[in-house]
Image (cartoon, rainbow, N blue to C red; front, side, top):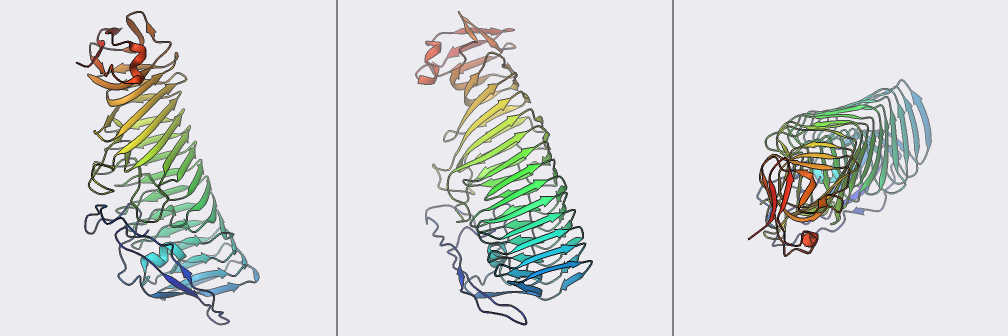
Amino acid sequence: MSQYCKIVMILVCISLIGMNSLADPIPAPEMIPDPEIQFPHGDIPPGSAPLSGNSDLSYTLSGKYTIDGDIANESNETYLSDMDDVSAVYVTNGGTLTLKNPVISTSGNTSSNDASSFFGLNGAVLANNGSTVVIEGGTISTTGSGANGAIPTGEGTSISLKDVTITASGNGGHGVMATLGAVLNLENVSITTTGPHGAPIATDRGSGTVTVKGGSVYSSGDGSPGIYSTGKITVNDLNILSEGTEAAVIEGSNSIFLTNSTVTGGDKNTPGVMIYQSFSGDAEVGKGIFTMEGGTLNNRDGSLFFVTNTDALITLNGVKINAGSGVLVNASATSRWGKTGENGGKVTFTAYNEILNGSFYTDEISSIAIKLLNNTELTGEIHTADLELDATSTWSLTGDSTITGLTDPDGISGNIITNIIGNGYTVTYNPDNEECSALEGKTYSLVNGGILLPKN
């Protein structure tokens, strides 16, 4: 992942060892940060690698074993590289490589974290220029900096892995990563990363598409979330465990869709899931989308979801939720991302058939729209958000709360709100907001004591 406080233009000259051919240089997409955006010195986005210090140079992509436009099939072979900036396996110029039960290992370091994240420099298995790699069984391991386990880059390029075990321990060493429109397909793949800034599953600049079926991922390094999306990542039946950092992060106008998966992450300093915009140039500005159906979503501490400096659409359907901190969603600005006064979070949170225990919080420049539908039960506080309830859903208060809007056509009955359980607490609303027009500025009784009343 790139630093967000610099203007990057990397020219990559692709050549091959042995029968190498010089390709056109590939420039990195232009990135011109707004000079007014605040970025603390040395701050690094989750999943990103530290500044390499020489991103103005050119780099050569190469591999110890190289396929250049040809087709090859191999079984039970070993591919090793101990050289800096040299992949163990490199497939380019429309080549096709199929490997069964390989042992693939690299120990060299990168000379540019940006070139590694954008173009695959120093990746153990690298494919580009419309090439295809298929690996079934075997292992991929890396120990050097910027050493991604498997990385396809560019439109028309793909890597498919089945029953493969991947380990990466270096700084900026992701398990797998797709960039510049490339495709990754994973089936029953096990990925472990232990170094800092190395997400097991990631995309980077120019987006990428990742599809995952089965398997497991584990990360323990600082700034190494289980999944980091600047593209489109779709996951089924995956077990994600991230120690000490987020389980999942979405940057900008990108997405993560999970089905029947177990997702665990976050601690007192990080949320379980973060949706944000760093303005690094890696992700287009827009709405981050997190969707989860079935499965379990856990966080140990910190908020379950944290949204800052972007818009977010969060949808949960039949997910078992465990919010260790008691905070479900926090939308607020920080000093890390964006312009002061303009860097809040804007969230639409929709829950279907959910049992939710926890609270919602915003700051003055952020907003949350909560939709509780299809037999959803919320137990907690709201400070402050729009709320929509259908006839099958309820909100049970655990403390005084404030709402900015209420859509509850089936719950307002005379002077009673029938699907808000007050438990003796008070809900305050702003009668001047159009979203509260149905309340007509009146005071209402709540089930089991408590009242809903207009703000003075």
